[in-house]
Structure formats: structure tokens, C-alpha cells
Amino acid sequence: MEYNEEKIIDKKKFEQFNQKNDIFNRSLWDESVKNNQTIKFYQDYIKPPENNKRPEGFNHKDYALRNAGWFMSDYFSDSKRNEGRSEGFTNTFSVQKQGTFTKYKIKSTTELTKELKIVGKKLGADLIGITKFNPKWIYSYKYNRSENRTSENTIDSSLKNVIIIANQMDKELIDTAPSALSGTATGLGYSNDLSSALSLSQYIINLGYKAVASQNDTALSIPLAIEAGLGEYARNGLLITKEFGPRVRISKIFTDLPLEHDKPISFGVKNYCSICQRCANECPPRAISFEDPSIKQINVSNIKGIKKWSVNAEKCFKFWASQSSDCSICIRVCPYNKDFDKLTHKIGIKIANTPLRKILIYFDKFFGKRKQPQLWWHK
Ligand code: SF4
Ligand code: SF4
Image (cartoon, helix red, strand yellow):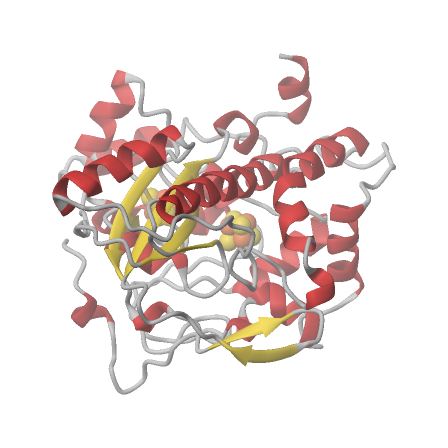
């Protein structure tokens, strides 16, 4: 089923998403979300709990490793805290060096687009797609965490193109989810993403063009990634890519570099999700819908006026806070979370796009089981 923006948007109900309503921001201002567990959740990212009597995968060294995975991301997000910025989370990155004043002379945008993708991969990106700046997915307001207020979300109107980068998260770590250990994959995903996005932005700036690197700030990443042809939207509320399934982190670069756009792709995810439901069944707080895609807004953390599978972010985050780490079960168990370098899985993803997908669903229950964190440490 092809992605069609017209079919999923209810124009009368649609509203751009206000970043204040992102569940992580709500946990700072909304008393219905904020509690002692959510406060502890964030504290454990600053100082790992030193209690070794916690369940396996949630011990001192698991948190030590998880927080090390987050180190580069935290370094940038904290670097301008005194200016009220959280780079990559509520603000774009502002660390680029000055480039040239003379613009590189472009002979062919087709060639330039091809080269940019090669360069991006060399600079660390696993996947790259390009789409147009679509104001629907830009936050109506951004949120200032230090001052607990919304602010204008201004973006230079000459940045007409968006480069979407996705980096895979480590499969072996995700296989231990839920655990603080598996949270290492999340942190590393963010850290690797920022490295490739900043480096590719600097390349564009060095060519004499504008480039603004961004992660969770400024705009919703998933719809832009879909429009840039990186994957399809899934029941678990995530992007599913052909290469790594839902096991990716996304960043974006807003640029005025003239580039050709990719097109959305379809490889059977919507049909597969409509009969799979494994993530919904295995989500401990039942935050994932068993229903068909709908326009219903579960709470303010869902964007208004889009027909889709929506996740109950309040239930999801409450579970994260209760175990003091992110969860990722819905990534681990997803049948698309495979090593697609293996021939069997390459064949599997093709079958998933045919009516034979029902057979795959039966056999897939033997995959995606949790690996004991101790086995990861001792391998
Ligand atoms: S687990 Fe199944 S239903 Fe959930 S996202 Fe993956 S394929 Fe879709
Ligand atoms: S991250 Fe965990 S709690 Fe949240 S939706 Fe996925 S499975 Fe459910």
C-alpha cells in the first residue's frame, strides 16, 4: 500500500504537533505524568545506580555502559544548557564551523545527490533519504526545558530540503530488552546519529550552502523519514526500514543545497502489521493498539488529525520510569528486527510482502525472544 499523505490527513482536524506535548517534555511540566519514578528515571542517566541487587540487566555496570553510550549525545545536549538550549532534543545543533563564502558550482543536481549520499555514508550514516521541507511535520512551538516554556519554532525559509539520516541500533544489545543494558543501543544510536548529521552538515557548509543538523528537535522525524523513502510506518509507532527494521534512530539536516527528492517506499509493512500484532501483545503496559489505524487521539502526546496506529505514550513512559530505563520490547520482538545480511531473512522480508505472510507470522514466534543480559556480558 503506497503512502499517500492525502489519505491519512483529516484537514479539518489536523494540527501541527506542539513539542511541549512530547511525553518527555510532559514529564517535566505535566503533573499527571511527573512523579518520583520519572524523576529517578532521569537521575539514573546522570549517575548510574550502584545497587547490584537489582534484576539482571539493571545492575551498576549495565547502567555504566548505557550512560557511556549516551555520553556524546548528552555532551551536546548539555553543552548550552545555560543558554536554555538542549541541542538535538529541543534545539537544532549550533556547533558548525564557518564554511566558504564561495558556493561550490553545481553542474548536475542528480550527480550532487548521488555524491551526497556516498559522502553521508562515508561520514557514518547507515541510511540516507531526501525529501522536501514539509511544514506539516514542523513543531508548532518548541519547548524550553530549562525555563519550562514554549517558544517560537523559527526555521530559515530558504532551507527547502531535508536530508534524513538513519543509523542502526546494535541488535545484540536490543535483544536484551528490556534492560538498562539494551538502553546502550538507544544511547549509541543517538550518539552515532549526531556524529554523522554534524559531519554531513559540515560538508554541505564547506560547499558554501546552509545546513542545520537536527535530531528530535524542530520537527517530527518519522513522517519526514517516510517521505524520504527510508521506510514505512508500523503498528508500534516506529519507522520500519528494509535494512534494519524498526532498529534505527533518525536525524535530519535542513538545507538549501539543491537536491533531488526520494519517494516513499512500500514493502508490505502495513499489510503485515494489520495481521501481526506481536508488539501489541508483548508490550507490558498495553500501550500499542490492537485496532486498525484511526484518527483517534489517545492523549495530547499524539498528533491531531492523522489516521494511523497511535501508541499510548503515557502508558509507555510510565513503564520506562517504573524500570528506570527505556524499554525497546516492541523493537526486539518485531519480525522486521532481523539481520537482513542473512539469506533466510532476505527471503523472509520478500515473503512478508505477499499473502504468504501468515505463514511467516506463525514461524516468527520462535524469533525475537529476550536474551539474558548475563549472556551478553559473558559471550
Ligand atoms: S511487531 Fe508486528 S505489528 Fe508490531 S510493528 Fe512489528 S510487524 Fe508490525
Ligand atoms: S517501548 Fe515498551 S512500553 Fe513502550 S510501546 Fe514499546 S513495548 Fe510498549
